Length: 101
Image 1 (cartoon, rainbow, N blue to C red):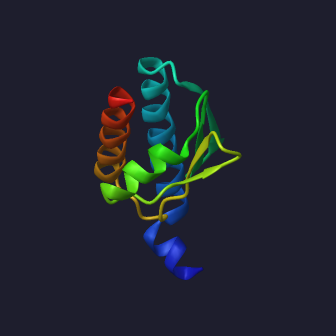
Image 2: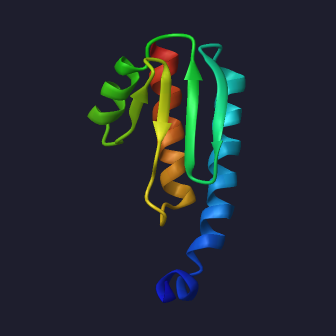
Protein backbone atom coordinates (compact mmCIF):
# COMPACT_ATOMS: atom_id res chain seq x y z
CA UNK A 1 0.00 0.00 0.00
CA UNK A 2 2.87 2.35 0.75
CA UNK A 3 4.22 1.79 -2.76
CA UNK A 4 0.84 2.79 -4.20
CA UNK A 5 0.93 6.02 -2.21
CA UNK A 6 4.60 6.74 -2.84
CA UNK A 7 4.36 6.08 -6.56
CA UNK A 8 0.97 7.83 -6.82
CA UNK A 9 -0.40 4.78 -8.68
CA UNK A 10 -4.07 5.57 -8.07
CA UNK A 11 -3.78 9.07 -9.55
CA UNK A 12 -1.75 7.68 -12.46
CA UNK A 13 -4.51 5.13 -13.16
CA UNK A 14 -7.17 7.85 -13.15
CA UNK A 15 -5.21 10.04 -15.52
CA UNK A 16 -4.01 7.33 -17.89
CA UNK A 17 -7.37 5.51 -17.78
CA UNK A 18 -9.15 8.69 -18.91
CA UNK A 19 -6.58 9.10 -21.70
CA UNK A 20 -7.04 5.46 -22.78
CA UNK A 21 -10.83 5.81 -22.88
CA UNK A 22 -10.53 9.03 -24.87
CA UNK A 23 -8.28 7.30 -27.41
CA UNK A 24 -10.72 4.38 -27.70
CA UNK A 25 -13.58 6.85 -28.26
CA UNK A 26 -11.64 8.48 -31.09
CA UNK A 27 -11.06 5.02 -32.58
CA UNK A 28 -14.82 4.39 -32.35
CA UNK A 29 -15.45 7.56 -34.36
CA UNK A 30 -13.24 6.20 -37.15
CA UNK A 31 -14.53 2.60 -37.35
CA UNK A 32 -18.18 1.60 -37.74
CA UNK A 33 -17.40 -1.89 -36.45
CA UNK A 34 -17.06 -0.38 -32.94
CA UNK A 35 -20.48 0.03 -31.34
CA UNK A 36 -19.49 1.24 -27.88
CA UNK A 37 -16.64 1.98 -25.50
CA UNK A 38 -17.24 0.66 -21.98
CA UNK A 39 -15.52 0.70 -18.65
CA UNK A 40 -13.82 2.93 -16.15
CA UNK A 41 -10.22 3.50 -15.18
CA UNK A 42 -7.94 0.99 -16.84
CA UNK A 43 -10.59 -1.75 -17.16
CA UNK A 44 -12.00 -0.92 -20.59
CA UNK A 45 -13.75 -2.65 -23.45
CA UNK A 46 -14.83 -2.17 -27.04
CA UNK A 47 -18.21 -3.58 -28.06
CA UNK A 48 -18.00 -4.66 -31.70
CA UNK A 49 -20.67 -5.57 -34.22
CA UNK A 50 -18.51 -8.50 -35.35
CA UNK A 51 -16.49 -11.31 -33.77
CA UNK A 52 -13.54 -10.11 -31.73
CA UNK A 53 -11.38 -13.26 -31.83
CA UNK A 54 -9.63 -12.41 -35.14
CA UNK A 55 -8.69 -8.98 -33.76
CA UNK A 56 -7.31 -10.57 -30.58
CA UNK A 57 -5.19 -12.93 -32.71
CA UNK A 58 -3.79 -10.07 -34.79
CA UNK A 59 -3.03 -8.02 -31.67
CA UNK A 60 -1.18 -10.98 -30.15
CA UNK A 61 0.91 -11.32 -33.32
CA UNK A 62 1.95 -7.69 -32.81
CA UNK A 63 2.78 -8.18 -29.13
CA UNK A 64 -0.40 -6.90 -27.46
CA UNK A 65 -2.25 -9.14 -25.01
CA UNK A 66 -5.97 -8.46 -25.00
CA UNK A 67 -8.90 -10.81 -24.81
CA UNK A 68 -12.43 -11.15 -26.08
CA UNK A 69 -15.50 -11.84 -23.98
CA UNK A 70 -19.05 -12.61 -25.13
CA UNK A 71 -17.68 -13.06 -28.68
CA UNK A 72 -17.74 -9.37 -29.53
CA UNK A 73 -16.25 -7.37 -26.66
CA UNK A 74 -12.53 -6.65 -26.69
CA UNK A 75 -11.35 -6.36 -23.08
CA UNK A 76 -8.29 -4.39 -22.04
CA UNK A 77 -6.72 -4.93 -18.63
CA UNK A 78 -3.29 -3.29 -18.86
CA UNK A 79 -0.76 -3.11 -16.03
CA UNK A 80 -1.29 -0.22 -13.62
CA UNK A 81 1.98 1.35 -14.76
CA UNK A 82 1.06 1.55 -18.47
CA UNK A 83 2.23 4.71 -20.21
CA UNK A 84 0.51 6.97 -22.71
CA UNK A 85 3.07 5.87 -25.30
CA UNK A 86 2.11 2.22 -24.80
CA UNK A 87 -1.56 3.13 -25.13
CA UNK A 88 -0.80 5.02 -28.34
CA UNK A 89 0.99 1.96 -29.72
CA UNK A 90 -2.01 -0.25 -28.96
CA UNK A 91 -4.42 2.24 -30.54
CA UNK A 92 -2.25 2.39 -33.68
CA UNK A 93 -2.21 -1.40 -33.83
CA UNK A 94 -5.99 -1.61 -33.44
CA UNK A 95 -6.49 1.08 -36.07
CA UNK A 96 -4.35 -0.84 -38.58
CA UNK A 97 -6.15 -4.12 -37.87
CA UNK A 98 -9.60 -2.56 -38.15
CA UNK A 99 -8.73 -0.77 -41.39
CA UNK A 100 -7.49 -4.05 -42.89
CA UNK A 101 -10.64 -5.97 -41.96
